[in-house]
Length: 365
Image (cartoon, rainbow, N blue to C red):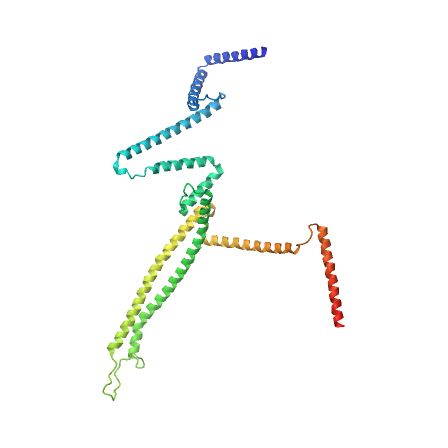
């Protein structure tokens, strides 16, 4: 009893001294009044929040007051945002119901995007800080690859596997595009060489034709005819030779035009494939991050080949080890017993060898 009485007296004396100190210092009195007002606001918000249950008891100090004020401010701001969104949705519904021209407006898109943003915020808040960059990287890879979003009933593991296969397919597509590009370059070079040969042939064709016409030993010679005894014989017709020459020239000209058209088409295809390869390289650089910005398709193919060689070497080593282990099959697990078994087998082998030698000697005798 005396202890309780002394504690009550000490508390009353402390309160009296604090009251006297606040009366003596107006600044402390204002601070105490401000703190009391802040506590009243916080308790009012807590009572509205916990209604109809009672407000839990907390320790009244500066740290607790600051934390509760921060929570109250965040909740009030969230309530205001929620109220604004609800008001905007109500206005949109009202405008949609009063405007007959907007009957086909995608009203569910706003609600769907709001639900998606809420799910994204909930997912990010439930993830640890180290996993948030991984989520952003996964989303960025899905956007760059053009991978469609999964339906709500799809398992996340199947979506991740599909995205993984899409990423691995990039290297294969890049190798295919590079192979096609190299073949197109070779074809363009061959076509350029053929065009040069055709142009050279066309430029040399008139001179060759004129020389053949003037050469008596040529089949195109159009000189004076040799007199013949037969009355029905006639000299070669110059018109026939000119017609043959014109037909050859037209054929060469048509082939040249065809080669030029094919060259233009292949040049356009080559530029298109170069653009595709550049886009794929940029996507791969963005996917792999800043550490591998300069990685090209050739480097990726070299890395894959090196990994395949390492896997083949490890597989061969495993096969050798398995063969070595199979050679010890049938031996007891104990080391001494195994050695004894090996010695016994060696003795048996020596005995059989001596027996074989004796048989050979007996057969020779």
